[in-house]
Every structure is written in structure tokens, then in C-alpha cells.
Image 1 (cartoon, each protein chain N blue to C red):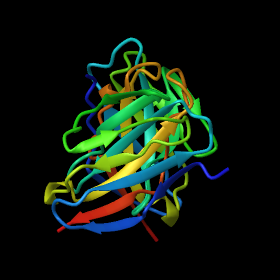
Image 2 (cartoon, rainbow over the protein chains, first blue to last red):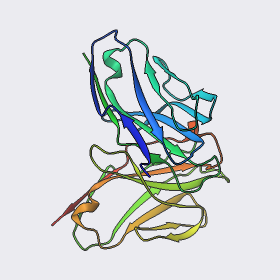
Image 3 (cartoon, each protein chain N blue to C red):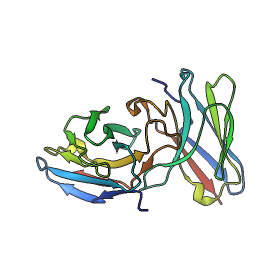
Image 4 (tube, each protein chain N blue to C red):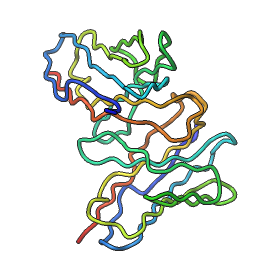
Length: 114
Length: 112
């Protein structure tokens, strides 16, 4: 049972490049989310999904796209990378909306945009 | 949205009990209180969750007074490995997680 797996762990992009951050969970969790964490700020929600085929915007969605074609995978796409997107990105999942045991987080992707 | 207030940092020594208090004055009826722990270069890890009174697990205890406007995470006999950032969150587990607000947390330093 691997939990939540994020790839890559580190990435450097040039301004304007695009890329996809991968997130996969093997716990059959319905709820998945993407957060970014910046120094001096708490985790901020980018996008989330309540199940396959259903996604919605979080607090800071601009510049990011998501899709949820399967229960297991929830990739985050940066359309045209900007230095302001330099951050640590975390993917998280939980079983369902009524779960009382919190989220399981991945180990993060550290992204630098130059 | 239920906002939380926690101390920015705390210091302790090995073997001591540490209590971290979180204030959440506008907690809603359906909201639960959840605490997470985060080590450097790792994602947050769920510690404990409760609605009222006291909850205890193998890691910590959570004390919630009757008015639920605050809560206290208690870590018994801390060790160096408990040095981490601790986050208090308030929200409805069955609700939209867009409403979960992550503050800066409390940075706990455990000294030898």
C-alpha cells in the first residue's frame, strides 16, 4: 500500500514551459486535492475532485488545470509556467466526504520556475 | 469560514508534555477540529480529530471545551522527533474542503 505517490519530486522549468505533476493513490479514495505551500503562507487549495469525472476550483486555481479520468489519478497541469508558481505542491486524498480521519498527503513536488 | 489562531512557535524539552492551543471562535455546528503534523520536506500527516470533550489516540490527546471555541492538542513526553509544525484546522468532514483554511501552524522545537 503506497498511499499517495507524487512525481516528480523536484522540477525546474523555464518561464512559459508547461508540465504535468502526477498524483496517484491506491487507497480507492474518492476525494483528491492539490495544494501549494509557500514560505510564510499556509497550504492553499488549487483544485479538488470529489470523484472520477468531477473537479472544481479551489482558492488559487489560475494557471492550473486538472482532470480526473480515474479514481486513482489526479494530475495537475501547469499551462505556461511563471516564476510565481515556484512552490512546493502537495497532493492529498481521503475516502469520502464523510470521512473523519483526515487527509493522506503525498511527499510533495518542489517546483522552481526560472 | 472558521479561522483558527495558534501560537507561531513553541519550545520544549525532551520528556515534557506539550500543549498547543488553537482558537476558533466562529466554529460552526457541523465543524470538527483536526490536527496535522508536518516535518520538513514532507506532506502533513493527520494526528487527531474531535468534535467535543476529549479524544485520545496513541499519538496525542485533544481537549475541546463545551463552547468549542478553542481546542488543545496535548503531546505527552515529547522527543526530538516531535519537532515539527502542527496545524489546527476546523471544518465539516462531510463538506466542501474548499472551506478548510490552513494557517501557518505552530512550529514546535523540542530540545535535548
